[in-house]
Length: 303
Ligand SMILES: [Ca+2]
Image 1 (cartoon, rainbow, N blue to C red):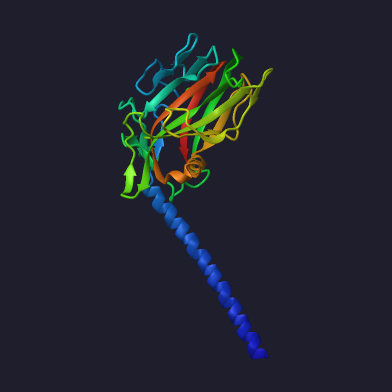
Image 2: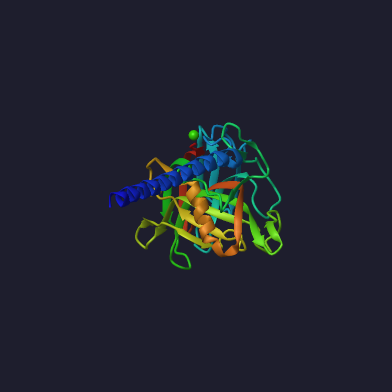
């Protein structure tokens, strides 16, 4: 009997030992995986995230309009980016935006994004930063932070769906890598709009809808085809989005989570990687006048 008890105790101790060892091994694996990732993984960073260089376009940001309408403007002065977009008839969307890097389908590039394994070592690189579905970035380690204020928001007209909307945000323009019968193929990012060549990720710092009498915040999380018709657009609102007028707020976007959600929403397309090649910071609307002042839009890598 006593012998059996001793045997039992030995078995239990051994099992606990195995479990503890496995746990240790996984932690070791996790640590070495993270160490490997920290040397191999490249990240993108913005140039002049604090808007210290005035004038438009300047050496860092390019101003653009999508469907320019009267009363819209873009400028950078005194360390602030100012955006105003007015869409009068509610029949389309448009925006006022700042671009850095490369847009799809255009075969043009303004100022390249910074790319590297840390912000300190990042350099201007035309290739962009690639993220793989099977090698996720740890949550809360790779963030976009923007301090901004809504300076104007005014209903102008109803839209076809009677949902006038206004958004302020940052878009990531990405090429993608896909698994096909021939192996892994990269998308022809510069190609025309006859087929899907990019993944567009819209992250809203603020998204609001006119409900007939007042604006209300909305939280988006879906896939659409809004940007170029052929390219899927992932639409996400920041969890701590800004809604109130005239109030400064720092909005935080977890890029690791955004990239994970992007792969989830593209699941059936066999996309295994995305390469961020360009970014756009914008105020967009349909049937609404929207204005914003942005103090900074920076990328933070917490290691
Ligand atoms: Ca600033």
